[in-house]
Image (cartoon, rainbow, N blue to C red; front, side):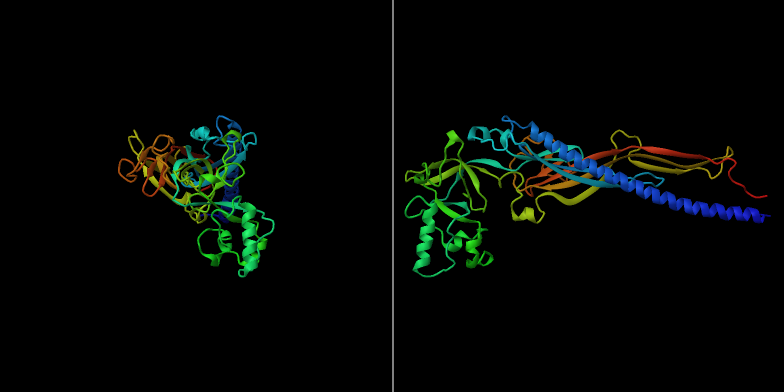
Length: 416
């Protein structure tokens, strides 16, 4: 027979157990949040420190990281206060940037740009793997169509054009304005009033500023014909390698200016090819519409696979054992937990252009190219040239365990 005293003690023990469990749960949640916050802050500080370090390491022999940009992605085990330990992974993403002013305005010549150490790059670290992506490319001998017009942005024009779109007076004002930034008469490659304020260069004037706002615009386009006569001094297209003077024009019609380092022309004096540093022709282009919609760079897609451990007799396993409820020595064995597994995490990076760098050894952590989902390549970092997607596969080993054993001798009363 169980006495009333024993009954009261049992009720008190139950209440203490319930409240104790609640307190432990709250403490565990606080600790888990604190650890996650600390890991995220650690990633952010590491990205910033390394960006400053990379930038300071740049000098006249290597200016690719004068404006350093670093992205860190780490899939860490999520802190868990459960008795079976951590079984989930949480991504930590941090980005840092830094600029070293000693090479910020360093003029690069054509011979220097032929060295990959001077092409600007962006660094990504994904679960310990290091990838460098170029954000520009030197294009030599870029063909120019006959009669082409180079476009240049003109900033802060004094005497903006009249908002009137008809009449001889507006035509005279437009002609006078063209002569302000064109050194030949008539102005080479003259643009109409609407063409100069077609800021996105799509030929659709309905999505551009109306004429009533022309006087308030801070910049507009101007056109320069691609002819030899425009490359001498004091002309719009003027190249002076001795003094590091290289003009910037939009030569390929993408709405973005390129820096011109050289040119060739035919017998008639028309420029038929140019050498440019194109900031939209590197591995990654963050200036286009695809980048604005989140379709360039690190994508949100992620997959996790389980891969057998190489050399393990049992392969992957997560072993959880419960001990005896009550042993003769008075010790309660709570649980035994052992892990031996590899998490294969796949992330995707969408490139803007296939520059060939992923498969020529320039990025060592790219293991194979093509056929990225075959049996032999499914676990390797692979570049697919057709879709221009880099599949980053990280193999993370998780091998740990614990053994809980509680001494409960003399602490329980079974009754009288």
